[in-house]
Length: 229
Image: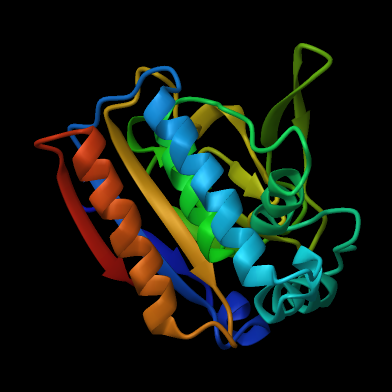
């Protein structure tokens, strides 16, 4: 079964070069981070350092394009960094990348190695299809603050991923809500690799193919499909 996923005309107008690569996977096996997933994260940090060649992440042309889009929908990119830039900054520190769980480690490694925002959602917790839209400001975004569940609302005009229940990720790919995140109980996931010009579509597809291969390696027998939307 393929999850419905749409990008609104308003978002297409805001970012004409936006290309989402979607990897849908069923029959996944998740669990705690392993030595193998940690090694992938360390290798991704090395690949990132080679890619940047001494530059800061925000100086990469793809990250610069994301900063322009964030500014276009009213977000301050130096305060709310896209997920790839935020991860890249962490990868370059002494502490390195966080170890979350096996599936999250895999997609974080791809995000850092290719410097492309990647998100993972648990399909079993998505209500209806996923839609990338500009928010009205009335939508609910359920998150956690200070250990307590709280409800926030996006800014009017903010680009958000949402389903029939509410917002699943704010500011395009800045902060994911806990409701649909990948946990150690996840068996079906959808992974979104989001690119803008000047990243070639072929490079985004290659990143998606690499993620699909990793998912197959760590979850033998999983049913995996890659599509470009």
